[in-house]
Length: 241
Length: 265
Ligand SMILES: Nc1ncnc2c1ncn2[C@@H]1O[C@H](COP(=O)(O)OP(=O)(O)O)[C@@H](O)[C@H]1O
Ligand SMILES: [Mg+2]
Image (cartoon, rainbow over all chains, first blue to last red; front, side):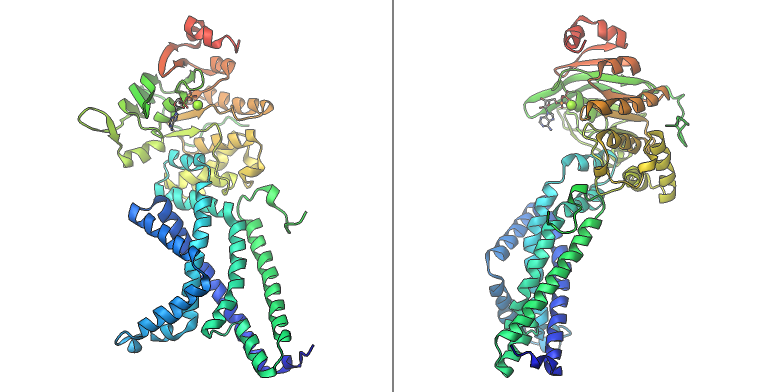
């Protein structure tokens, strides 16, 4: 095992940039994706017919096609198509449209929106009807019932599942190395090409992923445990008996 | 438990009934659940509805705050006649949403399954509607909430979450939640049916206290002794019709009701 390259500031720089990009992409996709997911769930449950239908089609297409294909579709397909538009190079969107990060984030947001949208929809359906009825019986408006009672309760119910989705999301990030975005895998590839070491860089980024996953799991577990009203039976630090 | 008067109780001198239902009819699909029920709950009195399971007790109660919309009939709640929209045949097809929201602030309900909001603390459950429906400040709602939690003996658990409470405690919080709206009429739908037997009395005790205070209440219950004890009026509902009504003594002596009561006696 040869880890001497680790002392090279260039390689340190790549790895650091890859790590930051990974976390940043994770955060943007999680926040944007969950907002979209709530919208998709709402549209499917309570939206007008055409919107409900659209949400279903969106979910089916995104969940029915590989993430890598979607990434290529947006980056090479849509991205290149937009490039061809007259005047786009002078517009304020141009820097965004040249940035692989933009397409990676877009793809991931849509993916989280579809997968977590289904999770949230299921959770919303499993909120006991009586709780929502109590809201109406006390004079809360439909919108108040939704944002004060229904959504918070649904999120409480599916928080462990959403946690799992976020961890899967983290491990989808290396896909973006295929569209020339500097992530951890891209950094490892560069190091491999220049040092002819195959295992060591891979081992290192695997270790970084594992450590990040563990930290992420613990942080999300902390969120779960501190979610208002979490049942006592679920209050265990590690899901180990 | 204290029995001090509520911070701002309404005047008991009004003579209009808290609720007056006239010939209510309600269908679920082809099933006629209420077949022309007329009922009046005078201000400051307690009315209990008894009857077999499936006789339409819950449906009748739920019409009183319009959780169910009757198909026909007239309804006046807290001095207001409900403005139903009717089709040319006279069937009720819609409600006035603004009036609905206003009325629901005046008629609150205690459910069989408590239906507390599990992601809100005990106090949070109690102040939610006063703040968001009546527009009270958090400070005022909290003072009100604490008062009524005290009233049901749950003040020391104000920061707990419903999932950590026993059924009896949850139902007492649910009663505080209904009281905190300072309603004209309190509805109870079998408030002790979901409780362990040893928890029933703590809830019945609270309800009895409210009856002694002169609160206007409409109560569906299977607790016959309790109903007889606290009620000014008893209504025996049988297959969607009022088969007997009057003072508890009258109804319990009614032969039609006797038969229903036999297993319980
Ligand atoms: N939402 C509903 N949809 C269809 N049928 C209902 C509904 N609610 C009640 N019913 C039916 O109406 C009848 C009366 O129900 P309910 O008022 O709950 O009776 P009770 O409270 O006296 O047991 C029952 O046959 C019940 O199955
Ligand atoms: Mg019932």
